[in-house]
Image (cartoon, rainbow, N blue to C red; front, side):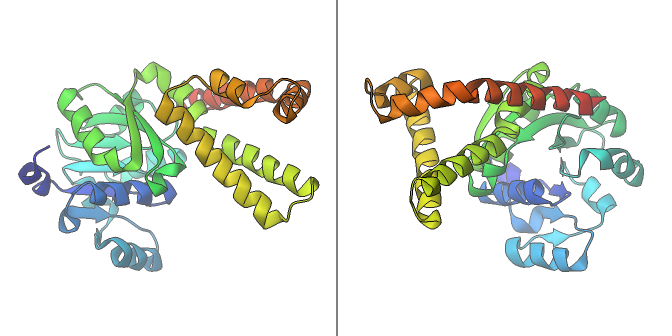
Amino acid sequence: MADTEQSAVTVAVLGTGTMGEAVLAAVLAGGQPAERTLATARRPQRAAELTERHGVRVVTVREAAAADVVVLGVKPQQLDAVAAEVAGAVREGALLVSLLAGVTTARLAAAFPGAKVVRTVVNTPAVVGAGVTVLAAGAGAGEAELARTEELLAATGTVLRLPEGQLDAATGVSGSGPAFVFAVADALAEGGVGAGLPRAVALQLAAATVLGAGRLMVETGTHPALLREQVTSPAGTTAAGLRELDAQGMRAALVSAVMAAAKRSAELAG
């Protein structure tokens, strides 16, 4: 989107929890003027925080729904209530970008008739600009809407287009995945403490190791199995640890966790 076109567009983030605020910050970092950016908040204290932190105007839900681009960041279970509250306020042809887990574009289009819907899955590392966002277009949304959404969310990190039928699976990998990685990092640190490290040192080592391993995989494009082999010397320390992980079923547990999260995402659509 050209700068002049972008500056004329009003963007509203309706629902500013952790993910909503992360997207709000990304939208502003991408060049959207604060004076053309709106947000909602239920509590006056939260409204004051958003204005002070981001320089945006906090408005009512109905005012936010009337923006050119509406980023919907409420909880999935609040969808029907919000749709009823803003009935008739969403502009014909407005872009509706949904952050709601498991909510299909068909359901969103029914809730907000006339809007061009793009469904996204954004993960929590977006808060520090290192997230993964996947998106899919609903009925009425085409290349222009996808491109605009990609530009709006570029500062969250990596942005990928997928068919909507793959978004539940993506939720299992990248949406819920950070929690699985945090669980691994916590276990690494706990193992370090058990082996004699001070807890603060063990946590620092675990966090830096997770960060470095992820960067190595992304920046080299090397398959993780090959990277694992590069670390593993015959009869060495890593080989001993990997044998224990296999014995404890770590790989199978992570595969099952991703599939369970994907299944739950699909269930939420119902």
